[in-house]
Image (cartoon, rainbow, N blue to C red):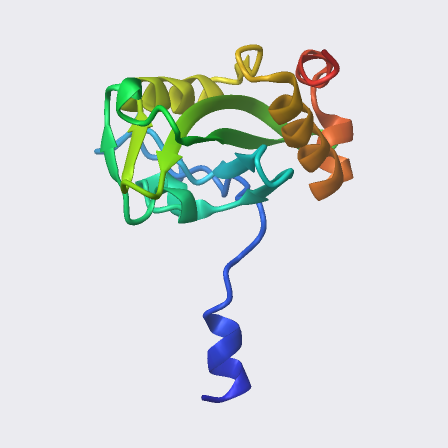
Length: 173
């Protein structure tokens, strides 16, 4: 395999930023459709003290979601490990790009029994809230929230700096 081929298979480790107007000025079919082009998914793993972009989560195919059966009952995984998927929306303003919305949803995974808990309605709701510029991280444990906040600051200091005071304060708690 050539180096060009192998580099094409590497995962992209960046946030997606909204492209130009998807309607291109016309008012035809598809106007008002939701676009996820400006949303990225960040996995927060408090067990390993890390956070990282995993775009597979957009389709329930992140590393932590693979090879397990998700069930809507949390009691099925009493010995599971907690993870968070943070839905991060990026917008462009006059000063440049900024974190617009962040909403985190939990998943609990027990690899030993190949089962996991995930509330699909919560994940969909949080994706929607992030797209609408909401910041929903108060329900996260303090350690996980700090991991996410530090990741966002370090991943792109300019996006962090341009973000709202409300978003920054949500991670200062």
